[in-house]
Image (tube, rainbow, N blue to C red; front, side, top):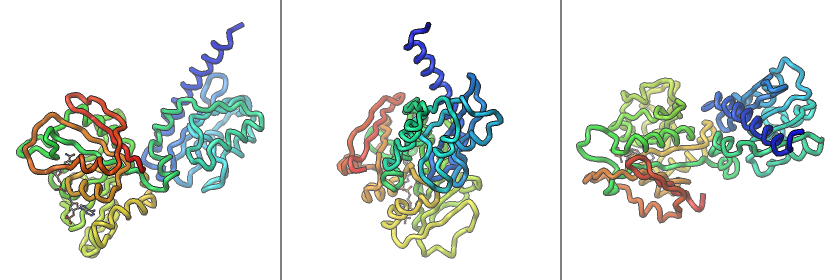
Length: 364
Ligand SMILES: NC(=O)c1ccc[n+]([C@@H]2O[C@H](COP(=O)([O-])OP(=O)(O)OC[C@H]3O[C@@H](n4cnc5c(N)ncnc54)[C@H](OP(=O)(O)O)[C@@H]3O)[C@@H](O)[C@H]2O)c1
């Protein structure tokens, strides 16, 4: 007879393997689920995946329902792996837990409980009361990484906003006369691309778009992804010939003064938000962009946008890439003043020849 620890170790490895598969499947909907989380599900019988599903987006069936409905084999005696606890309430679709209860699953394996505190754990308890063997917390950290800002959005009802800045050794934002637009090293830029992967939208000022012509996507990362772009362009100075604007597949949200309402190029890929003053912008972003399916924003500059974001205390997190390159230029970023607004150091690490620091807002 096998020892129980060997048996439980065997199950643990298998559970992790299938949960990994559910995580990979969930990513198929990256960028499409809007304010809903990415969720994946696999159903396993006799060591074989017999069905799988993922949540495609708002109004579509949840991952577990897609997997249950698409199975051609009987589900009794199988194990269902789902990244997030099945829902227990009516939303756009009926509660998934009620469908699960109709099936004689041998085991139910869950990555993490529902991040919404008002319902978290309810489905797990309900299923256990009905004598299901429910295992929770399998690859919890990896499952949480699927939807890094979802819990913040659900609990605080506002987007998670990260301000990222690259600084020279003399705390400047650019190096005058430098042909190559980057002064940070490749390792830093890789981290930036992986951070962009977590965001629904990248935000930049029109002057940064005009001068740097950036693409603002994830290229230097193992997954390719183009988040939506938010451009602050109060005085309508944006150059529409720049690469990011020419890319009609990329969704763009432009915040511009209402004075220009009748003078703008109307296009399907651009939504305009009209503002009376620049002070209004951040409030509008905080209050309205979830209706555009955006729950996280990654601010990438430049100087004026940073200044404006910091004086409105909008950022939940500040990420700084310190480069050893000297600038001698004028474009500065007052990091000390920024950090005095209630940020605490949460992480530091080397990034090639640069140094990376993450500060989180104690009031976020
Ligand atoms: N080191 C870094 O991490 C980094 C990152 C990005 C950019 N940069 C550098 O920064 C420089 C560009 O910075 P910049 O200060 O000239 O320009 P910017 O911040 O990129 O863009 C300024 C534009 O944004 C508009 N704007 C600012 N706040 C706004 C608000 N609250 N609502 C609506 N519109 C708003 C401004 O409107 P108005 O026209 O009305 O003023 C202006 O059109 C470039 O040299 C770039 O290379 C450095």
